Figure 1 (cartoon, rainbow, N blue to C red):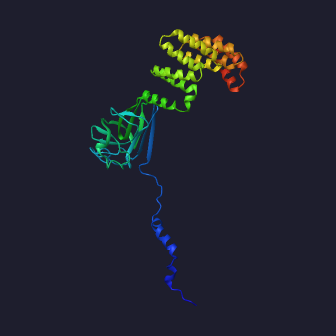
Figure 2: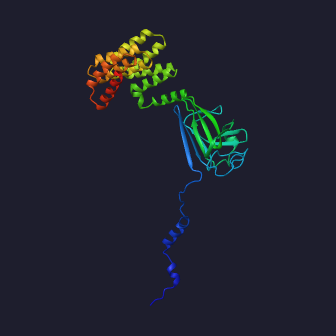
Figure 3: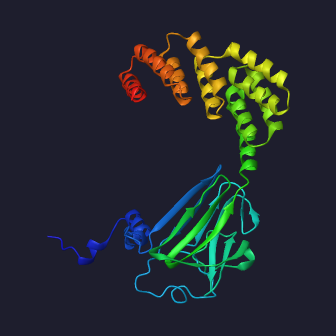
Amino acid sequence: MRRVHPSSTLRFPPALAVLLLATAPALAQAPRLDLPDPSPHASVTQRVGLTDITIDYHRPAVGKRKIWGGLVPYGEPWRAGANENTTVSFSTPVTVGGKQLPAGKYGLHMIPTATTWTVALSTVSSAWGSFSYEPNEDAVRFTVTPTPAEMEESLEYRFEAPTETSVAVVLQWEKLQVSFPITVDTKAVTLASLDAQLRGLARFSWQPWDQAAQWCIKNGCDQRALEWVDRSINVQPSFANLNTKATLLEKKKDTAGADKLRAEAMKLATEGDINQYAYGLMAQKKYDQALSLFRKNVKDHPDSWNCYDSLGEALATTGDKKGAAQNYEKALALAKEPANKKRIETVLAGLKN
């Protein structure tokens, strides 16, 4: 029998040997498990007008540690969170600390003292913490005053008092909080957005042009409203866009022109158009005009339960319970859906009581 030398069991074909050598580092490196983070990741987002503001951060806990002047030293840049630097991103230009910033992502750093804090938004948003923070890279820096707060074990960011043009960013941790406002020129942002949207598929329908014009009327940009409603009418005249232009003419004191357009609009009106327009007049407390339109709808659409239902609601709002009940009875007789019938019955019961 041929004897096999012990070392021969360690010999491999050349190709296999090369493969083993190439994969050795990967085989030696153990996989990293996904485990709970002591400072878990979090993010909060708030929309202001059309602007999305997002804060991305990690949430360290207090534990039994001294935070201010201890774990977070006074007079030194702090990442305002844990792990990577905290970031704040804006989808459009905003104003922070009295300075307008372009849309983008910024690193958020703070320098606390016992009395005031410096807040800095850095143009560098990919740093690890504040260890490489450089003041000359700030997009803006400003001073805020911390205030006492309820105990918060884990650092938290939140948005408070949102409006169409502003919101307050609040950081709260331990028994302290700091806050600073962010403002947005929502009118300018919306106009730019509408310009962009109306360059796309929306430009081929009358409704988007009219919608944009209506927004402009409510927000004091009548010249753009006039341009856009004319584009809407050029695509297709409708009850809605003719009334939009009539509103603009009324604002210009052109009552005759407005009346002429409203007369043209009535020729194009559907049952739904009249109903919606009348409810709009009700919201403006123009009850006589609204009732006239609701009655017109009943006359033009005598088989519509919804017309009687709407007229009944308008009469009830103006205090005419008898007239309201009569119209609700007609609506009940015409309604088919059980849910509508049940609602009308409930309203009638309330009117009789």
